[in-house]
Image 1 (cartoon, rainbow, N blue to C red):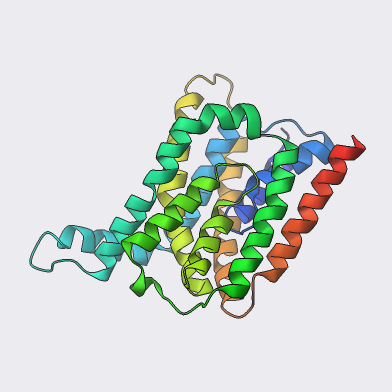
Image 2 (image 1 turned 90 degrees about the horizontal axis):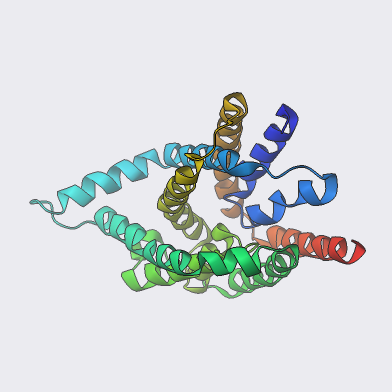
Length: 266
């Protein structure tokens, strides 16, 4: 890839990683519309490092409190809401790890297609609209329970299907459970940290076999994806505090229809 392609793909990854619109759906568009080459494993690892850096930096205060509280629960302080939240994030990550390990071959063989991505973009976009319109939106993270966290974690495993959107499906479940949009998004973003980290490490193992690496391109990919992801998190949280998720639903449906049109035209 040339530098222009690196920047555009890193921007796409950084912006779509945390919006409820599916990064996988967008990353196939350059190849479908422009004939761009596959970005490769090394680039995937690089942009995941960027998005992971962004979410960790943005939620650094929350993470510090959670880590301190988690260790503090074994002393005189006892369990707190922050220590319980740390437990919930860790335990809710288990379903996607287990299901991903068991189904990775099936997903790679049967589900990584433009048709699947188009259909999941539409279907899960409409489900997101249903959740946003019908959810009570009263609960906060202080009222999160283990049961609710595990349901959101199970929903996250559905995002293994390309086009679903990890942030979209976790927010959908949280909204169905009655959480506010802002707290649904915050838990979704916190839940993304171990998932991105584990996925990056898994891909990084495969990177050991790659001999020819464009280090300049990878560094640009890390920086661009990190900055764009950080700004995306900031503005998205501000947006949903004031408005509904309907614009993202409309966008998802339109994107899915565009992909279907590309399939039938080709």
